[in-house]
Length: 426
Image: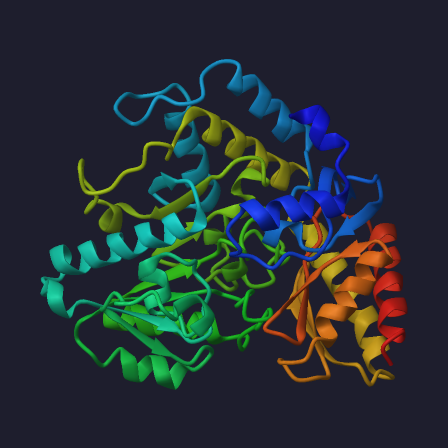
């Protein structure tokens, strides 16, 4: 199978996937075969800068040697025990990740959507056990234009009709309010049966929408005043992507232990992590909370055959070590500022691009065309031709999120490619 695959062309491989696979994605027409650091290569051997990082799962770069080594070594030892038994890695991981992020407890899962579902269950259980809310009236508030996954529960509170339409009936118990709107949250929290507010610190899939500087602090204060759980979905924004360990850290320069930075850190009651938690090497996600919240989870209330498996947690510990040891948050912050500075210089004289926004190395440009147009898609096709891979989101927005191991020289080379490509559309 390996030998035959290697001799197939990109076109033949795309045709195979189109014929035999479900059509639940619309990929950019490029077939990737290997990766290293900030680069990926297609099956014909052409090299590209990766400016998507598997939706921020590959923050540590493709095939980081330390992460790959931990994967290989653990895979040769034991990969899965299930939680029917203890394993020799999980306790070490539980201690490591809770100390790393400053929480009492972790509930390990596999994918981001699973972690969101887990947080929802914890929040509802806490409200009903700790506060006595009746099950049929317990409510969780969410933000419009959110993206937390595509499970049945999650699409029930999404306003993305492409993800929702035809998949009802929908799960009740959610209220959607505008993002970055404190007045709307304040009004929603007047309901005495709100258990929590689930929100992305930056809305990545919506087009890297960043809130007001004081939004998260005011969210925390409102939730605390109403005894409502503040749930931060940092699946895409976490693990150094936005220039700090977590997006809820603001722009602090700490290397962890953010709970000590009271002036910048907005501590959630429940923290949801995924994607870069494994550096893209294995599906690993986690939900973190303190004892007073996590104590509602007891044997039989939640679980996963693969959650907390020896292979996944070994990889996750290596991935987090890389983030800290290589100071990836600091690099993301510095290069992100440089990227936006250079793009703003271009935008000042551009008719095609109206805006660049973001934080750290999670950025987006807004194309001066309607969301229904194909301009952003065509720009991404030309970027591909010039050796850089990115994808549109919401029609006329292009998200740029390279691996955080990128150097300044590489970033400036990418800026030149982006600007040269945009010039073709002026």
